[in-house]
Length: 149
Image 1 (spheres, rainbow, N blue to C red):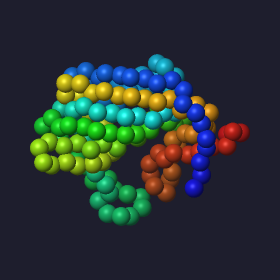
Image 2: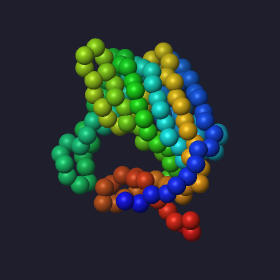
Image 3: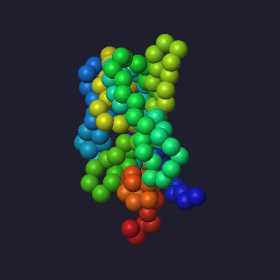
């Protein structure tokens, strides 16, 4: 295990409105506010979206098992925000459900808000972390860099 110690910076509270794309709105806020690292808490509902609900099989590199929905579901999610070489990358794991059925996965692609989504973004200062492509896994993963990198 590798780790770094940081501290909390600014705290952002955001309200994402009906029809807006959750991931794009959070990314836009990170760009505007120059947030380099952060922790996300998200709750509300999605009208439609896509998530990766695990790999098809437990092999490396993984082939994602996609789930698409368009029937308005409740959402509770937690995640991180770190930049790659050019932009903020959001890694948001969500549980979404309707009635007695729920599924958990990594929210990706377009994610349209139903009514309202509330976001709390806690900025993390003093860490040198970035999302970088790991050729073994075929995805951008968190990389903790030394202060010289």
